[in-house]
Amino acid sequence: MPAAPAGLINSLMPELPEVESVRRTLMPGILDRRVAEVLARPSRVLRPDLEGFRRGVTGRRVTGSLRRGKLLVLTLEDGGYWAVHLGMTGQLILAPGELAADHVHARVVFGDGGPGLHYRDLRKFGYLAYYPDRDQLMAGLYGQMGPDALTISAEEFVARLAGRKSPIKSLLLDQRRLAGVGNIYADESLHRAGIHPQRGPAELSRQDLLRLHASLVETLDQALAQGGSSVKNFVDAEGRAGTFQEAHRVYRRTGQPCPACGAPVERVVLGGRSTHFCPVCQR
Image (cartoon, rainbow, N blue to C red; front, side, top):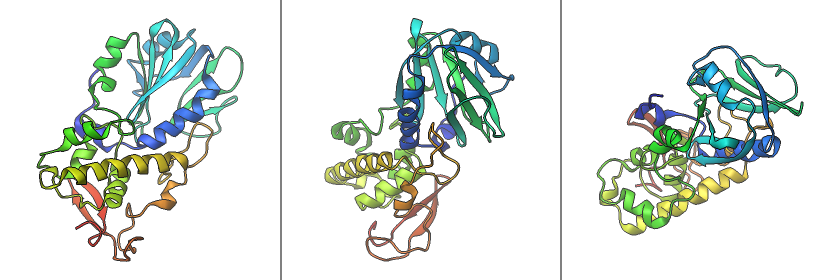
């Protein structure tokens, strides 16, 4: 299975808090259940292809879950893995019968006759993939990503960034360096840390980077507590939207007052990405 280009990996939504919210709401509904059938038409969202995915998961019981960054992985008995990347608009929804919605590309039926798992995706940038063993899982996107942004230690965070000359925001978005942070949580964490997104780590002190690490973890934890940010169509596995967008300080708030100092939030394009910051708090 070919690896996703770095630019595509960097641009996808939902981010870590949204994917973790899906994992937490999904697992109580599918753990220890056995897949009986996969109802779908051939599509690029099923990998390696429809029949390969169907053969891989059918008849197997879901035994647990993993997550690295924005990638959710369900573990299966017999050592297989079922990976889920939500892309920009993917949704995993547990519901009985057929889901009354458009753009549903796959329905997984379980042997106990309970609610099925539906994969819905308007843009079809996400996917469901089957890997027969850990070696093949690690050869794919899971093995290409850096440490998870929620669990990386402060020391490793500093080591991965210190001395770099690229803009700090661009480094936060590099999934091979740090997994799980996208546009929302990069902007929000940098504001909370008081660091301008265009500054490079080479001109930041160790204390600056430690403060950024603490701000990043705090922001991700707060977002998780509120079910993530629903700025587009994100919902968890129970169909509920997140509310952390109501606590955003700078993301998509161009021209609105900074909640810390009242200065208008500004926007620049950095590495092709819209970037929001306070010109006073983040000099």
